[in-house]
Amino acid sequence: MTAQLIDGNVVARRLQDDIQQQAAAFEEKHGYPPGLGVILVGADPASQMYVRMKRRACKRVGLHSAAIELPEDATQEEVLAAVQQFNEDSKIHGILVQLPMPDQIDEEAVLSAVSLDKDVDGFHPVNIGALAMKGRTPTFTPATPTGCMVLIEEAGIDPSGKQAVVLGRSNIVGLPVALMLNEANATVTICHSRTPDASSYIREADILVAAIGKPNYVKANWLKPGVVIIDVGTNKVDDPSAEKGYQWVGDVDFEGAKDIAGAITIVPGGVGPMTITMLLSNTLKAAHRLAEG
Image (cartoon, rainbow, N blue to C red; front, side):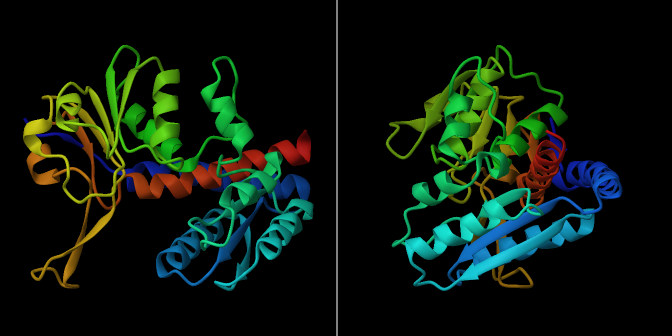
C-alpha cells in the first residue's frame, strides 16, 4: 500500500487562481483592491521570511499589502498603536499580527485589539470563542487549521464518525483544528507533551493532525493502516547529504508512514501553502463584508 500524497501546492494554486479572479472583480467594482495589513515586531528571521512570503502571495493574487515593522524593543503602546492605525485604514480589510512577538508584548491584548471585522487570522478571542460554542459561527477561522480541514476534504475524507487525534494543543493550530474536527462530527482526542503513551491513542486514529514541532516524532508502527495524516510540522534537521546541509521534515516519519497511511501531506509543500491561501481567502471575505455589508 502506498499513500495518496496530498500536495498543498497544487490545491493552493487552484484556490489562489480563484481568489485572483475574485480580487480583480472586487477592484473593478470598488476602485481599489482588497488590502492586508501586516504587523511585525522584531527581526526574527523566520518571522521576516513568513511576512515576505505572505506579501508576495498578496501581490500574486492582486491584493494590496502594507506592513508596519517595529523594533525588537517596541513597547506595548507602540504595537497597539500600529493595530489601531490599520483598524482605522479603510483600504486595509485584514490585519495579520505576526507571531510570536517579543516577551514584553502581551500578545492576547494585541490580538484582542484587532477589529473583529479585520481579524483574518481568526485569533481574536471572540472568534475563537465562537469556534468553541455549538451553534455559533466565527466570522473568521485560523488559517492553518482551516487549511488542514481543506486538505482532509481534498483527500476525500468525511470526518463524521471518524476517530481523530490531534497531536499538539497550541492556540494557533492544535486547539482550533480539534474544535473544527469536533464540529465536523469526528470523535477527537488531543495529545500533548503531558500525555502518557501518546502512541496508544495515535494507533486508533483514522485522521491524525500532527502539530507538535518534533521531527519524525510519530513512528510508522504507531499508525493504523489507511490513516489520513495532516502533518503540520516543519522541522529543520541536519543532513550532510543535502545540498544546503539540512532538510525540512514533518512531525511524522514520512518514509515509514507513506507505506501505511491512506493519505499523507508532503513536507514541505503540504500545509504551509494552504496557510497563506486561507489568509488570502479570509482577506477577500473581509473586504466584501466591509465594502458591501
